[in-house]
Image (cartoon, rainbow, N blue to C red):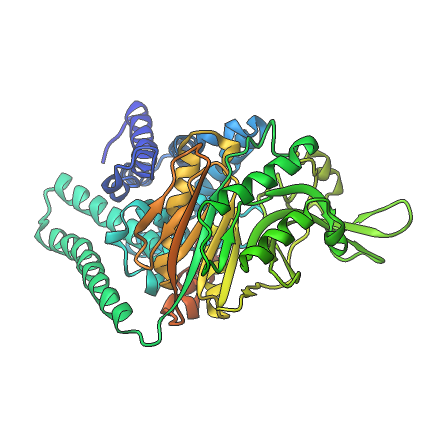
Length: 537
């Protein structure tokens, strides 16, 4: 396919535009995701067939992926302009390198093998982007279907990576069909294969949806949890972390809960860092708002899962997040899920998946000076501590998974919580940093995927919205609007069955990451081998 420089740039722009317009709430034109990579694949083939420098592909893929990143995530700017610029450029660069690895592979091991390598490289990249300190799985391709949950009920087998694989496969097929059309080659076979790859997942999803309803109705000895979900709507910039308003904020949470409390209420769910004044965990009972919560929970005979900013003292360095005090002790700060109950017992579970640049400075233990670049997070600057393992909490009625904000985007993390016994998923978050933008809407819709992957009910408390209730099919049962002071009351079922994805986790991502390493090494060997032969001759 012959393309001049101008046509290549137009194709790059088309690719990036299609990708971000397909994404939830930045267009929501979901079918475009099946075409988003096609213009880039056309550019790649043009560069290879025309023997143009491979560096040109770096430029064109950078343009496409920069548009994708900015178009889907521009709202990050509302929280921090510098952080947004870094996120856009860093994620774009990583995506560009992944696409270049595919091009390098196709160039040196052949066309067919090269195209087959593309899904492995991309799925491997998405897996890596879930498991390093620059983790940002927000733009995982499979997230695109979070507003089309009737299409992807099979996520219970594959997780969100299955959606990414679907996207990549359809894009490759569409590209090959376009190429055949340009070359006037028969297209009947490829069109039939494309139809099959589109239809089978959709039909499977329809069958699984009907099966799920039947299975849930047949469960014996059903157990239900009655929850009150609170959305206090506190401004995170001008009010939330102001010490003079701490008491009023927490009083508002209890007043809202009181409007929905019943005799059989088992759990009140309140947002991330709702108790925003940082305190020592060992001294929680001396916290000036503690008696207010204690008395209300005793009166209502219920539990409260609420977010808090906490700290712990150590007599020696506990982790890379430990900070040395003048007296020689160490202190660590945490973003915490706090479970309070009528018996005055307290469970602290620290957030494990931290936001890069805000709650964690990636690899600062190698480069300590980077801590000075940290973005302030509610009065705390620098890396927070995390749990040493995935944890859940036990209520009298059952086990729940406390999921704090960013953690709800990590599919395998939530699957692990479910696998160790969580019967209900509980998300607490503060999405008010971004304002009334696509950001909080995307975050809410991603939670629907966690419900499908693990076949669990999910309840969500967001400081400014959206809060809501999601059933095991990923359907929204109830939700609040942005910026409302609201409490919801809902009865949700506690479930014990485990899906294949719950048990196996992201096996597609893991295996792809593993295989892509060997594919790339093989491609390098093919590039080097002819030179070695020439040298020997």
